[in-house]
Length: 244
Ligand SMILES: *[C@@H]1O[C@H](CO)[C@@H](O)[C@H](O)[C@H]1NC(C)=O
Image 1 (cartoon, helix red, strand yellow):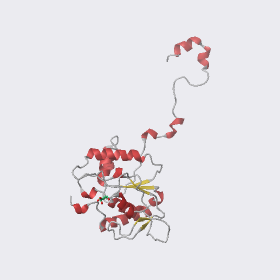
Image 2 (cartoon, protein in one colour):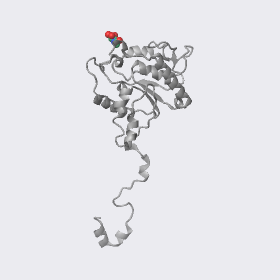
Image 3 (cartoon, rainbow, N blue to C red):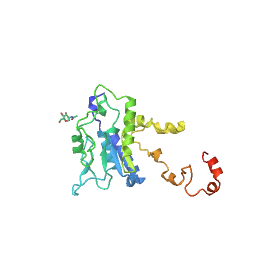
Image 4 (spheres, helix red, strand yellow):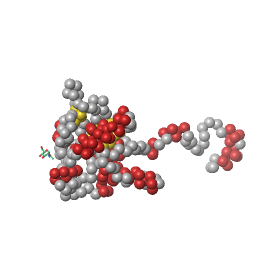
């Protein structure tokens, strides 16, 4: 509840965790696969996203925007380049559990845009934080519903390999809605709380689209196309079998 934690930034320990995850993302080759980074518009997620998936050290000799300015959010860090990294977009639907807690209230988008020039904030409609209320905390059910809305929005993206940099509370309540048709141990694994700066790979499948090659296996039933030789030769049999 401490107002000093308004839109909390990463601590030195947090940055250390970011450095470790960045190393992992590079040694595992994941950084070459990611086509898009979606980030919650709060300082700690923006710092994590650009620290892990951003380009290297920024040099102003190049004619490109930095992903992060030097010392953004008291990071004590140098500027980060937007060269050789995927595009970043900020999406409000994956924000942390809203309301009451000052750490989950965001700055004005214009402030973030200044600190993170190459991040795309154009999907966010309001400069000021109109979602966070100082006396009303979002219910767990509302977080889950917002999470499902976010997942549905994800399907509208054309990218397949997407990094989502979001929050443990948001993930916990969102993932709770999944895996109800799985073995309890699988369900437990899906719903486990994320540690700080933990990365998990998940494959999200639209079951209605599963097996798009079913068209070669499906059979329409009813009367098959082409002449029905045996029935055409026997009128009585045709009358008898026409209802079957
Ligand atoms: C956002 O901008 C408005 C208008 O400039 C200002 O009054 C308000 O204090 C700002 N909010 C924050 C959290 O900085």
